Picture 1 (cartoon, rainbow, N blue to C red):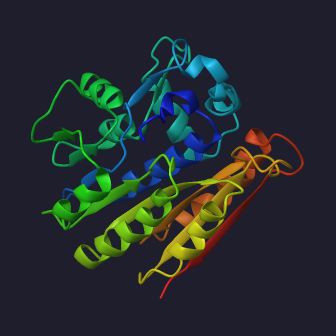
Picture 2: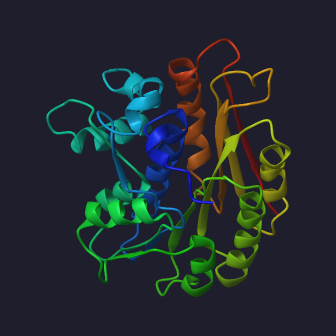
Picture 3: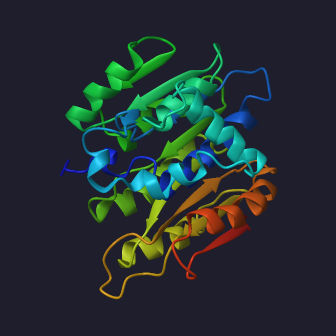
Length: 281
């Protein structure tokens, strides 16, 4: 089933959490001169117009990036994030929201490479248009990202950030995340893997982070941002999480500063909160 379109949700609270962390991970990997790869298993369209099309239907960005847009009290990591989005909106008006691939393109160096996978035909076409290139530095393929990992890992430079952000349209997506990571770690144990997941009432969503904690990895970090309480009828996303395998040692300290601020600014009511956990073998 390929009905999911991320444009409906572009720039919402979940994107803020995901992309702030993505930027922190990319900055960390870029501290060394040695090249690295950015691999996006579910790249989407790459970028999203907020003043037209799907994004205007629910305008979820208004409770996400828009709440940070004009603030002058941002913690440093959020300054990096908002500054990058503003760079892509040079007239100062929030019109374009970058997806994870465009954020990576802004931060990667000439020696680094992007490998982008998107199965949805419409989003794949837009993704190619957004990058205007399909060559050595950026490779875009209409393919299932879970399957692609088997042929990509380990990457030649032995350094990579792998972002796994499926639509979770079907129950099997949750198991595919776990299986994909199990296989990925066998091929590339030292890679940095970042998994986004929704906070939903369905059992598969609640169980996913617990299953990820059982993976054989030296260290992991799990962070969640809940902007409201779960609904009484059990429907709808009340927050999201990021589960990072082999996180930079600096990330936990950064998030301890960022998360209380995000709860204050993006939270919808007194039920808003965050969690932050570290663990590993």
